[in-house]
Image 1 (cartoon, rainbow, N blue to C red):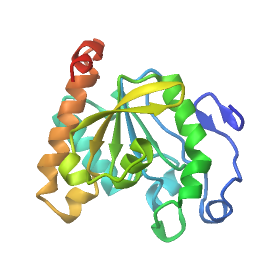
Image 2 (cartoon, protein in one colour):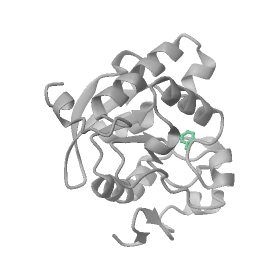
Image 3 (tube, rainbow, N blue to C red):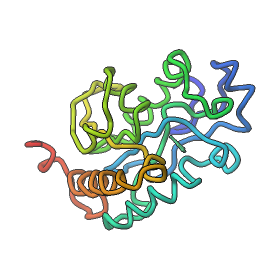
Image 4 (cartoon, helix red, strand yellow):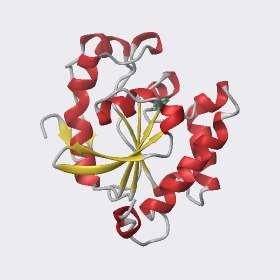
Length: 198
Ligand code: URA
């Protein structure tokens, strides 16, 4: 894939506004053969500074939910729809999402996870290609064509939502627990059979 070295985008100037606002390109982290792959929206200030997805407050919420599901951050792959921080933390535009799509699909093809989990409205709508009510659809699993094949995709609320609305915490933690179970992440077994009849 053009501009990529394995799973990492090494250089890219496709989105002029993001080239302007970013300090660096923030690539995905985690095992290159993870069973469970999380997709967020895009880097915020902390991620832009540290060069890693979900390292700010949202990242702490995600780490805690993973722990409650019996997983460590190092067991899963974490990436974003766009790899450069949008100015003033605005949502990435349709064009920016489209510009970065090939990188994300290439990453998903190479990692080949059992389950992809979309964290929040932007990645859920982007990957399912429809309008999504994340709070009511959290924990639901769908098929979506991503890269070379169809993938199982679970919708989740964004971890930051639990910071603004404590009632979302249970919804978030339950979805992560279910995702851990379905994917087989961390137990050394494939989640294929569990997902087969989901
Ligand atoms: N929110 C996201 O969607 N992605 C990050 O990497 C951090 C916060």
